[in-house]
Image 1 (cartoon, rainbow, N blue to C red):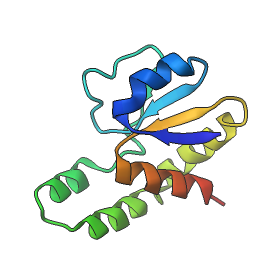
Image 2: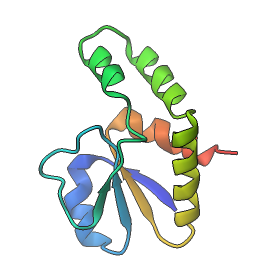
Image 3: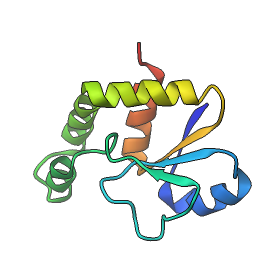
Image 4: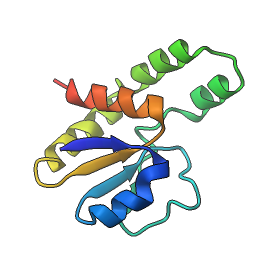
Length: 113
């Protein structure tokens, strides 16, 4: 099963479920997120430009969500999400990311064709 958690809850989750895989979805994972059980995944993270535009107030939250959803439609992202779906048949996978990204990403993964 693929689930989502916030970066702030990663450490406690690692202790509670050491057998699961943890995929940190970010362009640059926070320095404190360097555990043997985690994997960085920039491919599924919002692009640096999109994140910067949002943080600078150049786009609204709705535009950010729409553009991020569009980025997840790219073939490389689709392929990786299908791979993760397949892997999730054998082990729990936690997508570690911020609030908006987590729900957009999980929704996209669950609705893959």
